[in-house]
Image (cartoon, rainbow over all chains, first blue to last red; front, side, top):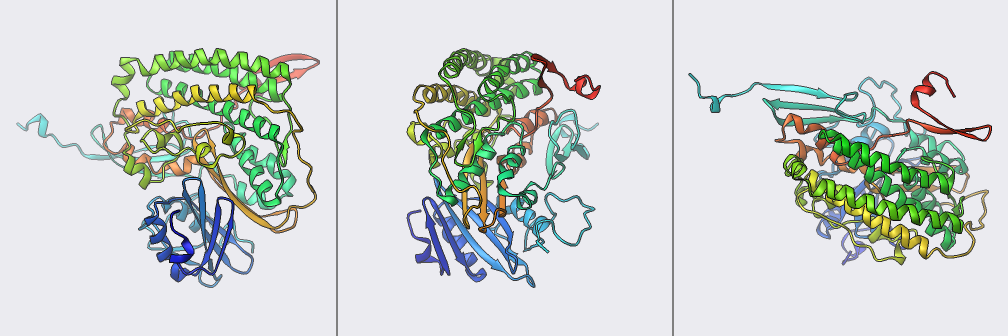
Length: 132
Length: 391
């Protein structure tokens, strides 16, 4: 990217390795980060959800030519909620539906909240990728 | 009496899939049609969900290369290639140059056979069965080449962390280059039969169009995006394996319709044949496996992409210092391309649904036969033989 992510978005921690960059930010700054990444012309590659044993993490992977920029937000177990990013990156829809089904993360404002992979009659209260 | 031109049709819902003769992959589409015209579409996925990501977290890392190879029967090299590159990135393993070349040879052969498979399927969907028979017959040559190089036609078992398992001898390289020269003439014939055929142009021009803006907005990847004029090719952008040593250009077309998809894929067959020949000609000497501590992978994370035949394939790997992975995430190219179905289907005719569904090359397995060597004799076993226990 032409501009540095850290200069425009408050970042808790940034790691750079080769073409990969990881930025840990708070949930409050997610909107600013997405607006910046959209302006820079990045493409959302996918979203990874992770159970980090004492909290949940959502990793947004953005591709910019050969570079990959990953924005990480942490969510407490008690409040597993993120806002939808489909208003910035419409192709996030399927990846957010995956978060709902496989990690039990509520995506607020998502246009289509059906879980992606799981069958409609899936009744186990623990989402498959949680470590409980 | 009402004018025929003003006639209105009732809206009907037509479900197609997950098992349907016109759709060779387990996805369910619900089309809303008005007469013969599709006015709305919904899709449902997950019929083949196998929890591979969860399984990857519950097995020692030494078994995961084997597991990720089995995600897809066609991209059986792209998945383990991306996986081992991620682990090597975390553990800072320097892969020998010869190994990176061998990996790239397998990756390009995979692209050739996958695109030939697509050309056959597309031909079948529009009723051009001769093309289907011809491309699939010639595609066997690529699978034979795989068998000669690795001993396996579909699951090559080539990738290892830090290198590759199978070396390439001079005789193998010579016979492979001969086979590639033959495939080059085949690619020319297929291109002529598809691109210059006025019947195909009449049938497919404008069918399943996707504008460049929509391709970018919906996150399309690979040949599907390139057919709409988006010049993104992970081989060019990321220069993984041995791609940094060669000058490649993303091959694009305009419009995103079935003809554009064919132009991109058929040009890529030619490009891959050229590249594979170059790889064989410049194959460096040296070891094929790096030495590393195979007891444990240090804690870390790596995310990266490779260009699978269907497009950008992303793997995210996180380790925690044990011999189990903390998290593995796999985003296959078809998932990224699924959303581009909506503008492709809207406004199309019901009869165009199968070819549009096949045009983005959705992923399905094609392992319907195998070769058994018993008492030194080679025998081809069909799926029917397997069902009847005649092995």
